Length: 158
Image (cartoon, rainbow, N blue to C red; front, side, top):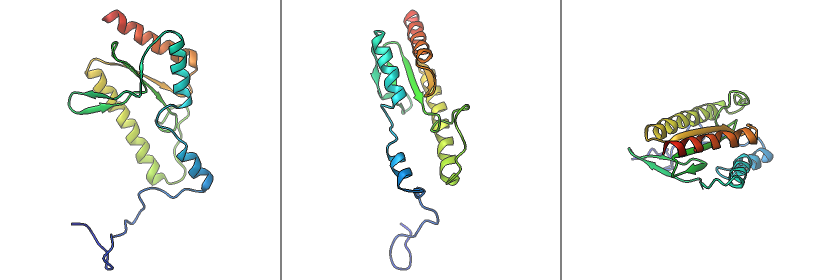
């Protein structure tokens, strides 16, 4: 049974589900954030492809126990999952910062993102996957080297 107010409508939550946008520009900026195909992710994929690596992008992995994970880049045969994490969304220790407005919304949301990252890492590792996490600010050559090292190591272990 749902809560209703005296007029018969739905009871108002004391706090809105999402914070109101500070202005139209901020609203446009937040709507433009992408879940996939971010600039750092595309650059990494292009560099890996140019080196001859073949992979799946944004590929959902259904792990035992009902765990679903969607890495940015997946080498299925080698069991290597690559994530390119944004500094704000995943609380980068170098560039991440505490939200200054609407903290009631953003602080728990960002904390859940980090917890979900750790849970995904643990589930993948427990199922024999190697996880590579990269920050969006990492230089492309070192990001490519990290992924190549993981894939090459996984090839040796096969």
